[in-house]
Image (cartoon, rainbow, N blue to C red; front, side, top):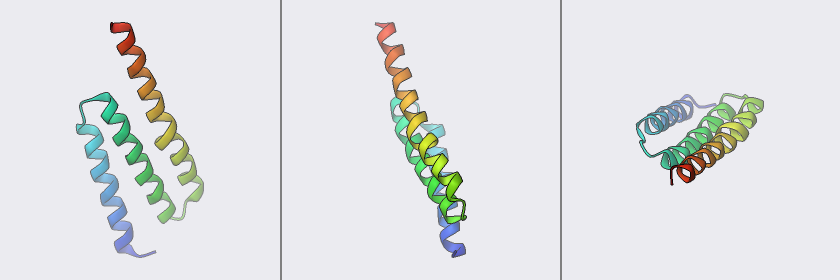
Length: 80
């Protein structure tokens, strides 16, 4: 694998992680967390770890953001 491609993937993960950390709105944070999980999964594929990438895509890019969105919705309903 090309070192330049690996460097670009790692920089993308770093930037996406920063965006997730700096996002204040929980709904927007769930969306950016999903994008972060997707980039991390792609990075794992580039590092020849397809099993880890599959787990990351399932958990990090799908289930965790979904749980965050459901939790935010439930909390907002109870506040009303």
